[in-house]
Length: 248
Image 1 (tube, rainbow, N blue to C red):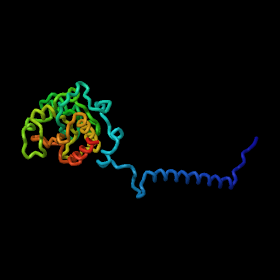
Image 2 (image 1 turned 30 degrees about the horizontal axis):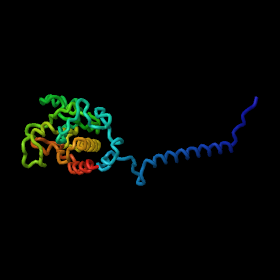
Image 3 (image 1 turned 135 degrees about the vertical axis):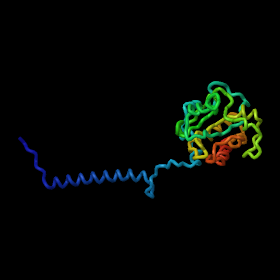
Image 4 (image 1 turned 90 degrees about the vertical axis):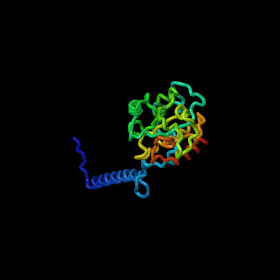
């Protein structure tokens, strides 16, 4: 019977060298992976969640914003239950929900409790608390091309001292305004970058398709007896970005 040759001191020394080299190589690889995720100053190179509005609005929409399943599959604004009537829609009004979160269902329940026939807005844009961040819900009023139930009787009265001059009759305000509502409370905290990006995209598309001038895109606070979308809404950014977007 043959016996294995006992290990010599030189064999043990070579084995230690091999294992030491393997450990050192592994350390270098792992260290390189860690350093690759850090900048030159040692800080994490992973983008911060606080993305600037300028970055958001210039990114390709197909890669940056989650779409609700309620939105038209072709990315357009065509309603599902009725045809668009030329000249029906005169203006767009931007609201906030006045709540920290919510869904289409929860808002519809609140509106019914207020005496309205279902959800009063045509479009909702979520903030991630309830409805997904940047997700768009298309309401039944838009799909059926019905007037919104988002303005009270005070809103159709002339209002001296309003933030902007409203060049629409009371009837046009009640029957010809499209309501876009941001989920959130704009007097308590800012809206998310995804919400603002999707708001800009949606409103710009509505303007182009329906020939609505930027002068007739109102914040709810522009109308008497109505508030929103709140003091944290970036009105100057929105208005300037909207003009640029529609021109493109």
